Length: 302
Image (spheres, rainbow, N blue to C red):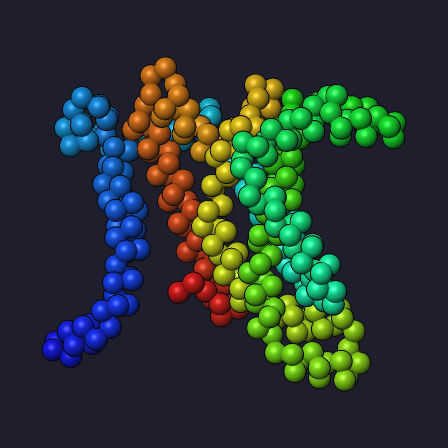
């Protein structure tokens, strides 16, 4: 025990640095968990959390039996999987391409151009899309110029997921590829030199040297993505919603927001139950993918 106190005292600067983020996590991540119990109660603001009566799993059963359940789950899963499958490889391809660019000025220019959209807020981004995709906007003008009938993109439910996913890829591809560029910088140059001496082409070097080098980072990011797969991007989805595309635009996050805060009779307990259900599903997915990655590739978060 004395040696433990001695080691702690000798490294007090490190523990002082560690204390601030630990306090932040406790205050903003763990203490709010106390409020989860309203998902199992008929919460009344007058009676408070402790005074409200317990009703068990009634809110969960009500959500599972509601006609909105399958529509909301289908939209959330389709949007999340579409975003994951389409968005995951593009930062890797961009990082691999930039890694072989010898002209440093051109490389920095491409990085700046692809990185800049990340700083555009969701409100401004959706505003840009509304202007660009309106019936008389530049996209439809271009379509008309090549003989294609104009499309009212934001009013057709079938276009919602594609517009959301590809605009998000354009906005975040530069920011996401930074991690892969950092991983590629850790690949030993001697491997490339040996491959060049053996006559390997660039594609061969990418396949046999670069991809295995960044694979541990890619697997970790994939596992983290699975943990938030049901977080379909609340702000952007809500801003892109119109009465005409609501059939495919309503996801769990926006549904919880409307049920819990916007409706004429806010039902906090029902909204908390839906949010808790989403968190449990995300937790199960995270554990499953982490276990699978560990079994297949010996890479995992823990």
